[in-house]
Length: 311
Image (cartoon, rainbow, N blue to C red; front, side, top):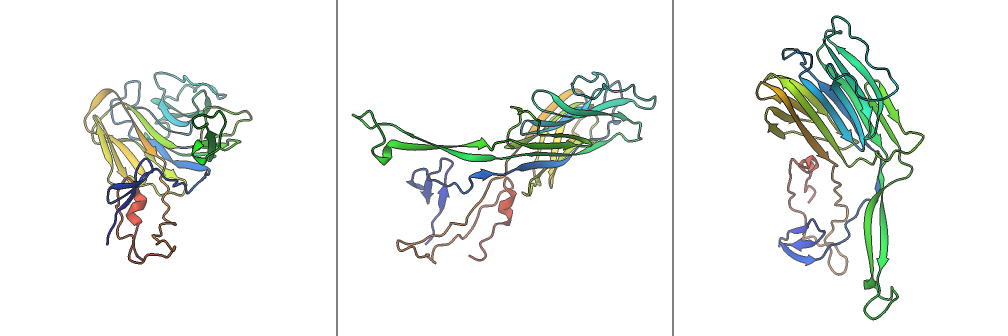
């Protein structure tokens, strides 16, 4: 005897493709704890194109939870952000390019500093980043409405309904670091910081030569393994390639102009099979029913380690 049991996107249960029950309660978690996105953000080979006032890579940033960590070429534009630190100094004679790296939210710059290339002999910039934000709580709201012919309720259970939504746990806290820059919870609340639901990596490439890596990002998501193995995308002239927890960007053709792209990384799914126990009407485990196989997919790397042993 074999049966395929599935929970569809709307929460309905199907057996061998036939719907047998409407949406069911499948919540196994009611608290979303502090989440941390961390890794490195970098630009490289900024000398691999004729330097005419500006660098090949204009800007790259990681965004999550309302916070940005940014590396930006400001050689021609100058510093357009705000913050307590002064504008960049006049670069030394040996420096050709001026980069800013900074932390910001949707409203203002929170911390920033500057780098001059190639005053240290390197045309690469790679900085560690970490964005940690407190989580959410599942909040249930119960409503009721009178049945036909009455103006008061509830009288019957079917006149009540519940709705669940995730709400930020109060007080909201955050701790962001980027290179030697830090930004922690302000004395006053900011409406732009929210619990982490996804992360984005954004690149603006101004020009470049094929065959060179110009930017990359590595992503660690709290204690959940992140793997981009086998994943890639080309948005000519940009090419993105995943390997482990890192995505690199190089060019498939020489170009001069502007090209940009954003990659969004979704929150890891929570898998919980603790209560997957087929039983009969006497609440006895049915030994002849078991999980015989799982479907593995690169979209959810955790599935690659699933096993039916012991069956």
